[in-house]
Length: 474
Image (cartoon, rainbow, N blue to C red):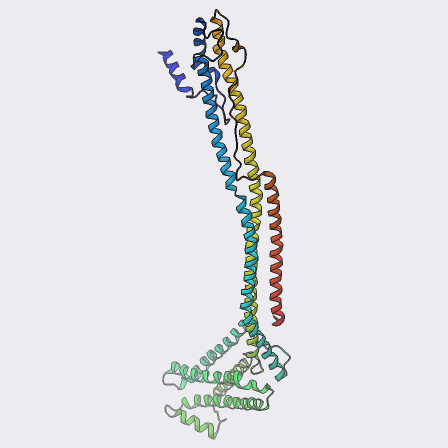
């Protein structure tokens, strides 16, 4: 039983083929195992006892033919494996497709230059209208300065400054509202709420009138035109009249509303006509002074909202807007142009790098293929040695049992028919030609880089020509 188990273990553990375990592409035959499996020693002794094959035999007997047939089958299997490898190498070489790479590089060259020119023309077209607007704004600005004898830039406040100016106006209204509301609440039927409502009307009127005079009327005092300057002077006098009138009316209203429940408005008008300065209460004078102060602050704030010379800010703002639009469009056009150039340069850089990598891969495939063929030739030599070793096992056992001389042909080693490997190189690149073509393609890539740079510089010069026609003055 134990011998049976050992024999079973041996059958299970041994491989199903007669090759020696190896990582080589073409493994060597295990001649000892093959000799044992074919029972060459036993069969040689048996045939030797019968003096077979005859001494004058010139051809292989059945056992020898079986050995050679087995070696031939192994040789064919190895050749089939080699053909599969060669087919894979060939497909890999074809997949490299250098022709397509060279074509893509030329297409990228033509496409890059064409796209740069197209992007340039698009940018010029977009800038043309803005350039004309900027030129017109420049002329208008220059004519305005010349006509009004201005040699300074317009005073345009920042967004932060404008915010604080308008915030000051709001604060003035709120402070005057609270102050007047407390003072007017004494004579209001609704108390503090009524006083605040009345105070709101006076505060908005007082600050609003001052603000309107400061923004739209008083600045004409600085105008070059005599009639407009006169209008500004009249506006200033009118403002002072409104300043005194509104705040005196408020002060009188405060005193009258504290005594009369009805007809306070009529009483205020009579007091303004008969005795405008006849305020009896100190708090009324305080209310008048606060109103005058807030009004003056409001008119000064209004004067600072725009440039002090009427109309100058409008002209200057139109110039700045046209200039900003032109500059923004020009920057966008330059960015688009630079983006096109960058995209093509990245594409060409990648193509140049890919050519180098593919050339290395091409050389590696060709080298691996040559090595594979060399290994197959070595394998055929090993198979021939294996055939002679197997024949030797059979013949030695045969000779030991013969009574007649062995055939003379047994003294010569057996030579197997070698398979000649042929490689189809149709559609493949020759290494020398490929090296030359890749060098030319990479030189063309370098030339394209230079051409793209020149085209980009030419585009920048074209944009600068627009700037010389319509300068971008900061």
